[in-house]
Length: 267
Ligand code: 5GP
Image 1 (cartoon, rainbow, N blue to C red):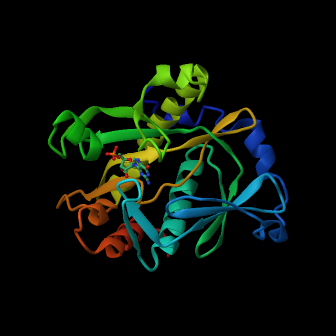
Image 2 (tube, protein in one colour):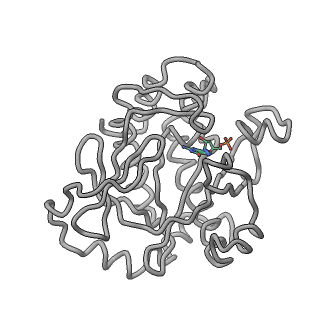
């Protein structure tokens, strides 16, 4: 079921009883002291906490592109992305999408639910850009109607190759039912985020989502920040996301901050 509307969304038992139950757990702040380093990705580090149901997600200042070939570190990026991600995750939760976000802990860290991640990336494209423009020879900025959905395997070693539902099923990365839920949620998220960005004067060009399992539910995990999406100014079409770093356009952090401020993210 694609293209679910906002009114339909409110009738979907999103997150279900399991999430409600998790949210009702009394959140003792001592539970959220970092215990063990769990995993370091290209821009975030995950730590365990005393409660195995929750992790601490630390947003670093590191910025990478082209599968880590291009690297930099930009002061404040971790802080901006932590607050940006919290704002988007909370907006999605308010609209009925179950996410792993629990709360902001400090400037660079948030508490998230401990999901079992599904090793695929879900990309939604509202306008042609990036990899799809290159792959299909389509000029950047063309409206995609309907939006395009693509799966990629999450694998640095293989440079995140594009895959389809047959690969996911055959190699047991997720069940067919989980694939259907990830697609449905990705399009619901598009229905929520596209107007949210447009109201602030931005085109949400494309973005990448990752989902995980929490008990029986499929829940949005990872992050939503300008590192993992394309955002253009709706009037000037200026690029305001990680493409500024990929393409050496300058003013990377200034652009991240201005998008955050115009969206109403409190930094
Ligand atoms: P593309 O396939 O054009 O490279 O990327 C499509 C969208 O997904 C872009 O907004 C891009 O930032 C995001 N994206 C794709 N793969 C990754 C990834 O491995 N990490 C991050 N942070 N974003 C990604």
